[in-house]
Every structure is written in C-alpha cells, then in structure tokens.
Length: 137
Image (cartoon, rainbow, N blue to C red; front, side, top):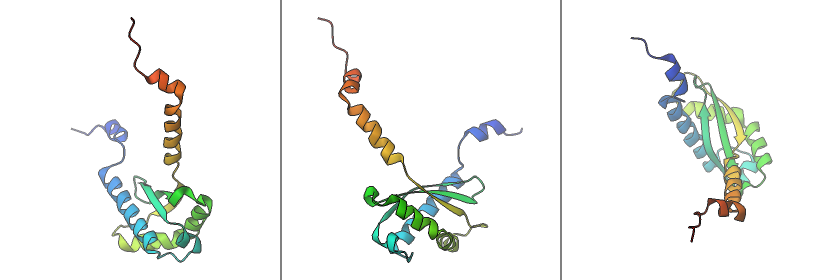
C-alpha cells in the first residue's frame, strides 16, 4: 500500500528538519555569545537567535534574530549579513551534514506583533466586548 502523498505535504516540517534547525540555532547562539565574530557592532549588541527555519532539503536556513532591547536592529542585521560566510563555515564545521546550509538573516517581528495584539486587547472598547454579558435584572 502506497503512503498518501497529500497527507505528507500538509503535515508541516519533518522532525529531522526541526531538529537540524534547532541545532543550527544553538550553534549560532553559542558563536555569538562567545564573541567569536570579530565585528564591533556584534560585540556591542547581544543578539538573540529566536528561530531557525530550515528548507526541506536542509540547504537553506532562515535565521530570525532580535538584538537585545531592539536597539540598532538594522546595523546588527547588516553586520550579520556581512559575516554570513564566516558564520556558515563555523556552523558547517560543527555539524556533520552533507551540505553546509546557506544562512539568511531576518529580523524577528513576532515580538512587535505580539505587543500590538496585546495593546489592542487592552483597549477599553475591546475589553468591554470581551467581558461577560450583563445578566438581565
């Protein structure tokens, strides 16, 4: 009996893809925390690697980053993109993979979106609508 191909497409990333993405995230976090990258901007601004999304073939990694307190985000992204080749090489040396994943650094907007949603939910008009309905007397 053949496996259902449509079911596999809808199931999301495989366990292996998720595991490799998490391993890349840990390696990049360690490299940046130790200060192995010789860049003045990265030395001044601690960077949080919030998520790494791997492509299904494990050749591309989208790395979501957020500088501490969100300060000078564009400068930090530029510094990471400038040092991409060195970071790819460092990650590849520590992983036993057939191919070294190409890294692409993007700003993590999820924190901004979450605070925007929180702000909307705290709006008095929305809070009133979310409250319990009044009992008829």
